[in-house]
Structure formats: structure tokens, C-alpha cells
Length: 137
Image (cartoon, rainbow, N blue to C red):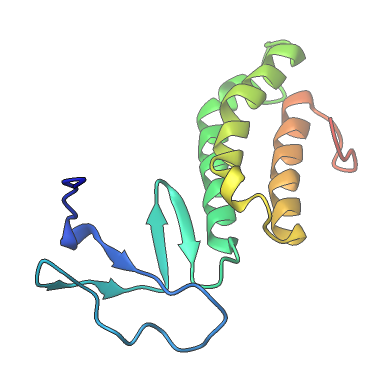
């Protein structure tokens, strides 16, 4: 009916839940066994077995840090760019790297969400040359 072809080599099986047993059953697509995984990546979002989102949040933080390092000449304390433009760069380039897929992992635990906020606050403090004890800019 739908004429959808599934590529068995790109397919992964993931059993989500609190149970300790992994998938013992065999899933077969066109005669090829699908491998059971502890975590899988789907559309750039890392899903783990218990949906803790820990690895997804860490990946988002790493991506934001990588983008920040590339923009460092524009965002650093000695840059002659205005604070308004620095904050605009952060909002348009770095924040999307931090929040990609947040509609799916937006209900992650508070500690993971705080890590994301702390990362953005650190980048903002660097851009406006604020002291370490300033929480939000």
C-alpha cells in the first residue's frame, strides 16, 4: 500500500523502559536480523534505553562549545563588536545548537536542563565580560 522500503542495514532495535533485560527476540527485515542497541540516533536526537537524555544533552553542549570556539574571535572580551550584536550571534547561532530537538527531550530531568542553561550563561558572560558570579544576562 505505502510502498515503503526499509533498509535493514540502517535499522536498529531499541527497547525503551526500566526493565533490565534487553530485547531477546529477533527482528528480521528482508531476511536480515536487526541489531539490538542500548541507544539509537534518530534525526539527530540520541534516544537511550531509559530516555534519560543525558547523552543528548551532553552532545548539545559539545556542539554549542564547538560553535562558540569558532565564533570566539567575534565573541571574546577584546572583540570590538557591540554587546547587542554579540548577544544576537548567541541567540541565532549558539542557542539553536543547544536546543535542537528540545520538543522531544524538553522534559528531561532538571539537572540536565540546568547544565544547558549554565552553558549558555557561561557563553553570555564571556561575550559581555561579566564576572563569574553573574547568573543571567
